[in-house]
Image (cartoon, rainbow, N blue to C red; front, top):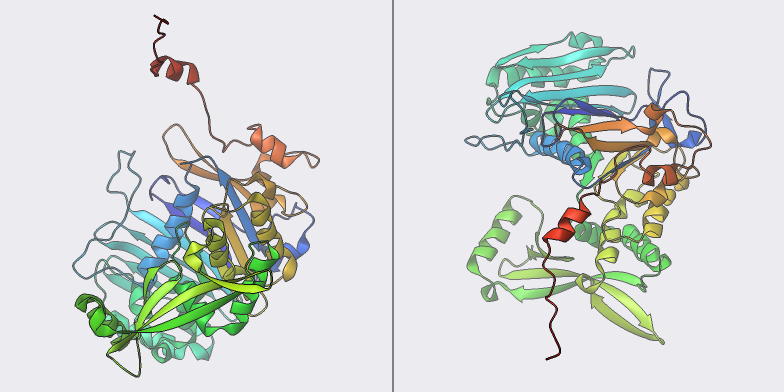
Length: 455
């Protein structure tokens, strides 16, 4: 689970901002929304809902997480500059950008972060709690220099991780490459338990869902996991979409009928064990493993029963809201079995307010105290419900006069316990709402039709 995330000098975020998911000790109620943090007397919150006006920077916080995750897992090309978008309204354009995650997995707490410019990694660090519950340095990188902490403080199971770090120190790392990205490239056996846990959290536990998320991973999941396919169909049926079932249809196409470049791309993907090519919402192509001259088109279809007759629709014919909701359902399926952190940007995109509320309520009610997190940005004020959320789970994003995004929690405002949060937010008592003004001047600028006589 994520304990906190800090970012500085990225897009609209100038000075360092921190999303802190440590539960406030002064807040009472919804105790099952919290999970104990190992070796501390603190607890982590299972949900966070971030509000703010359009262009206030809510999505930039999510983009910062996604950017950092991509740089860790995918890395940057050898001859390419880092695709970093820094805060522009500043007199310090060369100042590095900073990203740091504090998270827990199993009985350990990890702290990983890095400072970068468009050309290099200027600093990088990894810390973890040892077998006595104390935070200890794993490695620290400053420019080209890499140092290691006293790794003997960790259990003997970290021996492979120690050997891997020493080997990487000898091999070196590119100036524009994170050391953790180099670790990701190692075989799982060579990483060792300690480093494997860090790689696992960033590559498997942290799941970021942007508003325009594609359906490639969902289609793969629906095809390979019957349990999820049944769950998704039942959930979509229960919210009145008219869908009774979901199926994955497969059709074979002779490779000669497709563009040569596309077929070559499919052959390359097969050789590298990569995912199929997504060609539309709920549609993908991959090479037949038994026949390289055949391409299989996989299409997601929804079943509707009307007057006793069954009809099938390609899923891309369903409403935008239905398609969006399907992509969010993995956040609700593995609540009992996996530690996942779902970060959803614009939860209310194409969703009715009651559906956004239903999704969040299902998450917090279905598995109380589970090692799962849901972090969302939204405009949907129906979620500002004291029966649904704790006050320390409600966050706001607002820009200052210098166009910098600032994050703050509702608990920082110290509002009365009996205050109606939704009404007060819309009245502007917490900030983070759009300011609409100057309409009189705009009316003077529009052209009105000239009056004409009846002659």
